[in-house]
Length: 164
Image 1 (cartoon, helix red, strand yellow):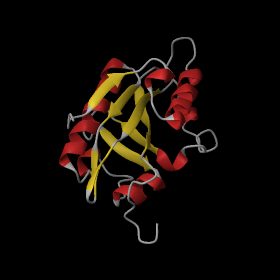
Image 2 (image 1 turned 60 degrees about the vertical axis):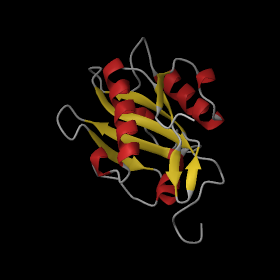
Image 3 (image 1 turned 180 degrees about the vertical axis):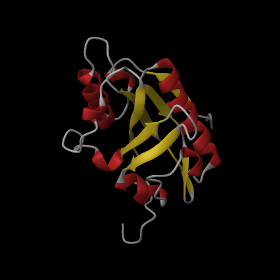
């Protein structure tokens, strides 16, 4: 098995395995108008309620730190055992995962496209399959200001918080 990330641009929901991520991509795609990227109004808890605990929102800055966790969904926090909201991407505790996420975010930002990242990740005692999608969010001038990311881990993925 390839241990590195597979990061590819996606232009249709069929390129995504997880149904919830297909739905998120379609919501993002449909929010774009006249060739423009979707705006910040897409990042609304009511619109994202079907996947809210599995969403990450990054602020995309023109100067370092280029990517900052604005929101890390509770399901993700419960599974990785680290709260990163408000911290720069560089604070991610897993160096390999950091490199993969950074590469996906840079591709998304530089190419102005949604990307799919497939990557086996280590959680506790083993590896699990992982799929994530990262989609650019732009301001009124078209500058990418955020990345809306969804990721779904298998139901059997361990949780770090006691009792979960």
